[in-house]
Length: 458
Ligand code: SF4
Image 1: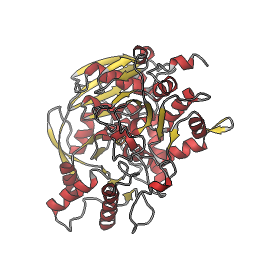
Image 2: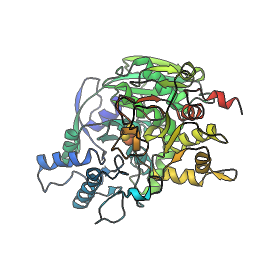
Image 3: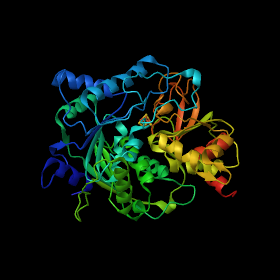
């Protein structure tokens, strides 16, 4: 069996499963957020009753993160609905925006968008927060009301996005009927070269199969190249499995996974026991692709979908209006360090926005020092508008006052994960997906630029 089949077989209490089988799977974690949480709660209450209790209050994780730092009253109200539900149900893992359990969330635009407005328990973007807060464990099943839930496949688990109806059912029962997906095999060999990042790997893979090429399939990444990647890199890749239509993305368990998960579970006091899945010697794949990381070059997905692959060096004729680094996939500490390494001592020539995915990442960047400056200062000195209000921000457009949102038909190079028309705001804007290093180089020139041009300048 493949990694995905083994995980699902275990969660279904079966010795083996095959692609195409429909099995009832036990959930280890159900995650929801401010966009889909209120709808999920409504379905749960409608189907199970107004006084129903969730199947396990320690396994429902609620993370407001999407439309948070906006004056839009309906968005603010969504956070209050989550708080009421968490209180009513005794949900242990609710990462509230504010500290007062009886308060109401309201963003104060008079304080500006850059300075922190959230409280101490706020966790930031759900997919990045889940591992940081110790909710991703090898061998487990994670369902989330968000398509990029597949990011947690980096931790050797089956993680997938589900709709509000399914989530309402999981909330009440702790299980879900799942069709076992076929597995596509991506064997990574070699090592990434300077200026090339994990984002380039996944943009290359999506370009190979097309933005619907993995529809309802598992994408399994393994081989020595995968082993050489950090957990942050693996998260970037697994996150974008859905951008090829994938049901999930999944990596093997190794010492790096163990170190990350053990540290995070201990730090947060979450469940520390888990059982990784290993692949069998005989696995049935629907197709196989071998990728030599040594040969990979900075890659861009052009408007209007993540499968429109080109090399950055081929796109120098495309002039840009803005640059954006952030999101679950591209707003991690390691992403900002690569971004800052290209920008250090230079100045951007187009509007450039930086949105760390979580408050912990804000803290990392404000405390890491390069010489006499913090990394945060390196970025602001280069002209990047950095906000302390970690979250999804303009990755999903959001209300008109969302930080970094494109309210006009602009061209933006972005470290985010999706570039369908209107994704980051205006329906006629265009988004070019790239690694943080390529976003940085492009912000310095105002056109799409291969970051190796700056690395060679020393
Ligand atoms: S950062 Fe973007 S992709 Fe990630 S959860 Fe938020 S809106 Fe979705």
